Image (cartoon, rainbow, N blue to C red; front, top):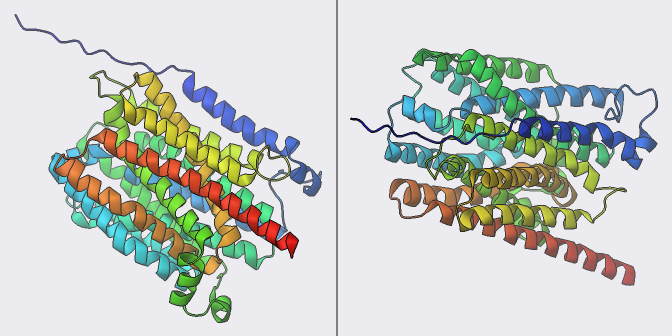
Amino acid sequence: MGVVIEREEWVLTPLAYPLLSAASLTAVLLLPYFSRWHSAVVAPSSPSPFDVGTTPFIRFRRAFLLLFSLASVVEGIQLVFGEDEFVRCGFGREQMAARLAAATVAALFLGGASGIVSDKLEPQRACIFYWMLQLVVGAFKSFSGLRCSWINNFILALASSMFSFCFETWIVLEHEKQGQKQDSLFDTFWLMTFFESVSLVGSQGITNLLIDDDDKGILLPYLFAALVSTIGILYIRKAPVTSTTQHASVIGSYQKSFSAHVLRDKRVLILVLAQASVQFSVSAFWFLWAPTIVADGRDAPLSLIYPCFLVSRMLGSAAFPWFYGAMAPLQNEDSLTTAYIAAGLALSIVAYDYQEIGTLVILFCIFHACVGFILPSLARFRTMYLPNELRGGMMSFSLALANAPIFVFLLQGAYHRNIANSTILGLAACGLLSAGGCIHMLRRWRKHTRQNTRSL
């Protein structure tokens, strides 16, 4: 007689996703009624409490957030299949590691140079170039014969690198051009993170609608991504141009300016390291969360668990405006330090020893909630300490610092199998905890600067 082995399946509670979604929406909807700044600035006749600023800027920000959401949907479609896409191409573990390592090298070198090029060009041109990259990848993957090509990994890595800074640079320069208040820009930062998470969840739903059981069904989502990319290109070409050439005489040559404002400024270097630690930890999570959850052999509904992480990120970004400004219970640096420490502790518990699947899901949700809070906080500090004309170069520099260890771990861990997954997660946790300490030092330096100013 044959032996039948029954696999136990872990079931996610059906209330997890609705509760997290309700908490995120509640934080957004209640914000105007508890924020002193919104109560003082927004007129009673305003159709939305977040419509702050002049009418042209309000119209631009709405269109920008819609365009950014579409870009996030395209990003989600390109990444939603994960390892399953390599499996469909017939790749083994070593081949997957080689492809991912090659893509990391592309992001390390080409992505680093793209930040400098983006700073030299108008932000609209950088965004158009991003959409063109997504259009090429979507068009190639729409054909089964080109879906597994090496060039797709290189182009997608470059596009993902540009996504992290080209849209942020555009909104900052447009905000400065129209002379809006800084608080409205900070609101845009957390709204970008919030809508990005919503769009990533939506990309999963769109993919599920377009795909079918046939192997050729995987081509339709990429065709949709190419169509959206075309729409993005056509829209940006009609938008007014936001030029950065007016600052050339002030900033001087890019190399000297980058050295003076980034490499020699301890505050900006702290932000570079803090950003790199977040990017590295997010990449480590993306590679390791699924094998970590199913490590004990039980089946788990991964397609239902991952949206909970994204909704947790929505909750973290929605909590950001509650922790800065007049109604903040802590100093801005203290709140960011706490978020880094919480994220680092969550990953350290996962790395230290295996936990139950339910515990792992909770820890990963805490990690993503902290990431959702950290990302707009770092964007806010970049606006405070960094010239806008160096934003792309600074962010691509931090991305290069994050991609360098990822490349090593992909070769040694996934290809040669010399590094355990727990070691990678442990190093990510150490990076987050160290970044929290650096942000605390940033607060002390700013306090010391204020004291010296008062003594003068």
